[in-house]
Image 1 (cartoon, rainbow, N blue to C red):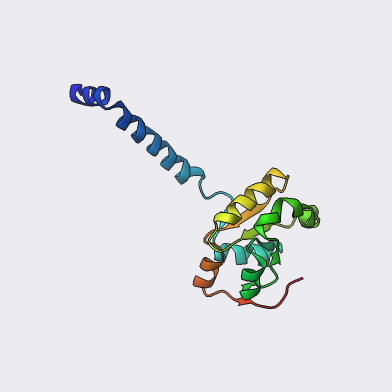
Image 2 (cartoon, rainbow, N blue to C red):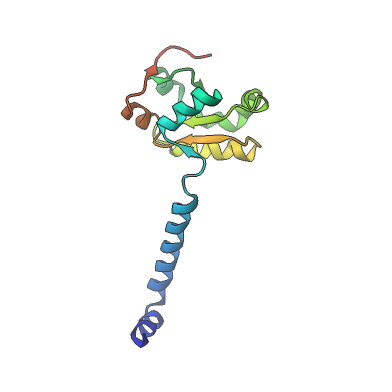
Length: 143
């Protein structure tokens, strides 16, 4: 025990880093995936709760292939177009936000939550995970 205290006193920076990393790990394990859904869970939300899928990729990427019936609202102007989604909020429909890999859509989902949308999910892994799960994509224009 004496050696541990001596080590902690001599290397407080390492001990502090360890505590921070452990805290972040515990936070990620307990709260990290709330608000996100995998592709199979997204299909379940669409089938059971008539969820709306919002694709935040650029229009050119969306045109190359997107989830069937997904609405394209590119991330670069997303905050200005939130009002177009209010009709789904009023009907109580969940919103699933998707991008290429899940990073941009996480930010867009956070923006929607701040705007008062309650049931918002980030598609974990994005369109890449969707395609890896062998789920269909289309090139046809949506709604």
